[in-house]
Length: 162
Ligand SMILES: [Zn+2]
Ligand SMILES: [Zn+2]
Image (cartoon, rainbow, N blue to C red):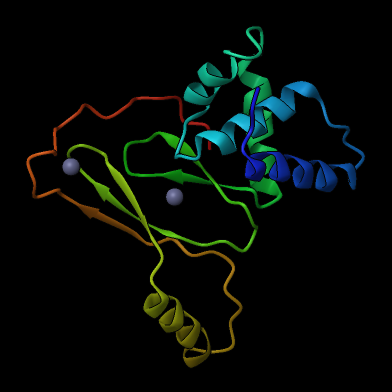
């Protein structure tokens, strides 16, 4: 399997982190992490499982689920829910990476953004309003596309795993 440099590097960094806790790397976990970063989108466990099974046909839901929990725990992914009850995992190459989302309520299209002005304003607010260290930031703008490419799709009713 050919893997872009970034996803191979992130697999190594992840394995270094979990090794500190005495967890050994496994081929199944490596394939899950590689696939997750190669696909690089907001993905549910079910969708990731399907993609990983191309390389490892007998991998189970629980293995993928546990790996995603580890990635979240170590700051390599965020668990997101965009208002339809489905948990999706959002890849992060660095634990301090932040971005925000704009979500179309009709077609469920998700657009990521990172606005330095918002960033600066949040940094200012955490000192203007008191002495705070920012732990988590969630900015989700629920919108409706105003072009013709917007097609209403039924919301996915996946298993809620948070
Ligand atoms: Zn995202
Ligand atoms: Zn739309």
